[in-house]
Structure formats: structure tokens, C-alpha cells
Amino acid sequence: YAPEPGDCDDTDPLINPEAQTLTILGSDEFEDNIISPLTGAPTTQYNFAVVYTDATGALPPTGFPRALIDFEGNGIFNNPNDRAALLSPADAADLNTADGKVYIGSISPLVPGTNYATRIQVQSGGCTTEIGPFDAPDVLFEPDLQIFADDITFSNFNPEVSSSLTVSAIIRNVGGLPVNNFAVKLVNQFDTD
Image (cartoon, rainbow, N blue to C red; front, side, top):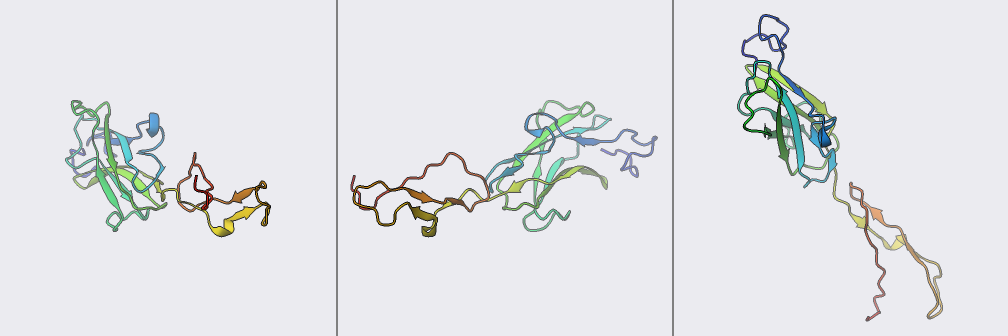
């Protein structure tokens, strides 16, 4: 990476004329992003993938590429809830980066929040190659279903014994993630069956 000092942006055609790049993998869950999933819970495993290319075929320095997960999205990476994840080669036997080398990584847990900005960086000799920031992930609380007494209504407040009765309830999800395929069961506390 940047084998000659003083040309971080590769604008000098005489010094390392082709830039080192980080690009989106462009397939499967990484079709248009560096992180997957884009939304999850604090305990979700968030995965990263990127393609690193260096025209000289050189590998990135030790400790790179790395994903920077900026909780506040403020571009400062040492706030208390910011995280970093080291990426590793998807194919350790591939030692040539001239044709692009895939790096992957993951992280869990993350603090709930929706202001995250994620980027992947390689740094060497005072030069930085970066992709991002991407406005992800959205880390939301697990689904939390609740029913309160005021949410329960009856078709008849004074039904006759053994008459039909319709009970309706509003079920609220106070968590951050959607919930599907759940069942609600009405139980008569005096029924011994």
C-alpha cells in the first residue's frame, strides 16, 4: 500500500500510478453494502465483506482492512460505543491483491442505535484508503409484545352464563424489531382443564 511516500491519492503518475481500492463485493447479501444485515438486534452477528485491490499485488498492512462502526455517525471513532473489527482474507491462500482479494469479518454485540455509520479502512504510511460511510446498521431492541388491561374489550360486559362472547385485544410491540408468526391465547383463570 502506497509504497512511495507523498502520493496518498495516487495523483502523481510517476509514484505508484494506480490506486489501492476498496470496493463492494457486489453479490449475495453484499450486493450494495459492506455490512449485512442492515437491521438487527443487539445480539445479531453483523458481517462485513470488501474487495481490496492493489495494483502492485501487495497485501494490506497488518491490522487492515478494518471495519469502523461509528455509533454516533460523527466521524470520531473513539467514542464509548464505537467499535472496530479486523477483517481477514476469505481465501488465505490468495496472496495476490492485483486482481482483488476479498476480506471478511464480523462483530457482535452492538449497542442499540440508528445513527451508526460504518466504513472500512486501510492505513499505511499516513495514507488512508476508505469505503463508506454507509448508514448502517440499525440496531434495534428485540420484539417485546405487551397487552394492557385497557387494551382488552368485550362484546358484552354482562354476558349470560354459557352465552357466546367476543374478546378483543390490542397487542403492542414496544420493541424495535418487527414480529411475525406469534400466537395469543386467552385463558380463563378459573378453568381447571
